[in-house]
Image (cartoon, rainbow, N blue to C red; front, top):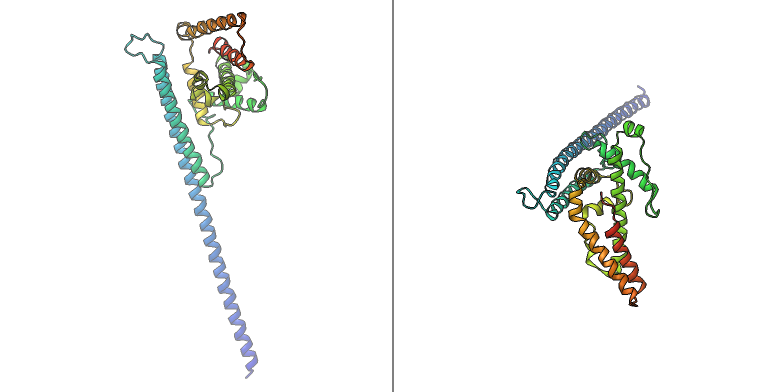
Length: 296
């Protein structure tokens, strides 16, 4: 009997068995890896679907809030004796509270998207049935504003043609121009407050810019075109003052007061009373803002 041959055959059989077992272990390992990857993909898909559903719910809540706030702001132009009259201060407070809640909810969605490593949160509402036209308009304005960052006021933003309005699904010329004009006003007012309030700490400039306008002024700069931005733009279009009566009631007294202050200031200078250049520049800025600020 050939002992060496028998031993070699046995060793070969053992080696083949070990290789087969190793291959089986590797196959099972690959299967587990595939299952793990599939599970991870399924979890991410579920997470994306959950976030998409919550985004849809948030946009629906935004629609309801816009419609409710629109009613509130229409109540502000009623006579003070009317039972449904609402003063501007309360309407502003409710508007800013709503904006704060919406921004907070959007921030939660952004944070969860980051934590679950799902990429960047999609805040676009360009396909939304209610907000779509405003979202597309604001997105276009945002892009042109970013091209003009650092440019002196007023920077140029193109007026869309009739063909663009139809093809891109934008707002009409009047509403589109309002969104641009509102952005210009908000930006220049924010610049005025930063420039003068840092030195003089005067209450007029401290309270001159509401949170709503201050946030909208960041469009195209530090702030991306978010869901909250679209909410602000949609509401602004709906609540902007179109009645001469309300304009005269609230704006004209400010203009008259500013013109009286202007006359008094000039009379002081005519009488030889001298002011520092800083104070002269400051007063010119405030007077120009009160008298000449475009009213939408």
